[in-house]
Length: 286
Image (cartoon, rainbow, N blue to C red):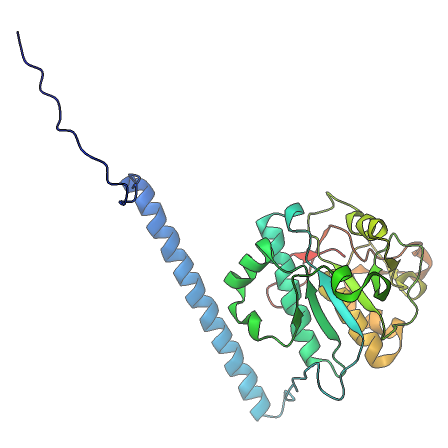
């Protein structure tokens, strides 16, 4: 009778992490991915350094005037409040959330350069948006911006907000310093059309659309990026003219003949637009 000899029993240590075997091919792919990521980061850093050097040289040659950075507490700042509602994480993919955060960053940059910066807010900040912001723009905590985890209703009060939405039958003609103007931050390529507006209606808050069709016609789909809406408000505060604001902000490719206009630009929907500034090739429709 032959004796069956088994392998010695190995006691599992509960304190030791369980490791998963990785094949050589998988390891190579991981190393290649990490290498590409590192080279991409180095390339971007080099490009930023080159751009800064070019701007520095142009300033020295008198070709580029120095840009004054302003803060919300400056005497020249406007008392108008503009907030981006970040409560739609669950309706967006990771890529779309990144697009939205790039728009938030662009709005911040434009507000710092504006002659009359608005009181800029990010509401309902948390979850995936906060996680991605930490990865993309770690210095956001040093921004001159009001960031809150509260919803815009909880933060400002139901009677103190105006939600910007093209579906609204109300037209925004003037900006009230006592109100906070809300831009819905949702990018999902029209899968949830009108969601922002419906949510505003359910909450019982005031809403309005920008008076775009009164001044310019929009060719193609009636959508704008979050940063475009933000910049339009900055321009209107600066000049007091909606026409000038629209003509200076809306991309020329979207402006058609005035007589063809019969509806307003979407102020909060879920489309994809375009912008070629600050690496924001994909835009949020608002």
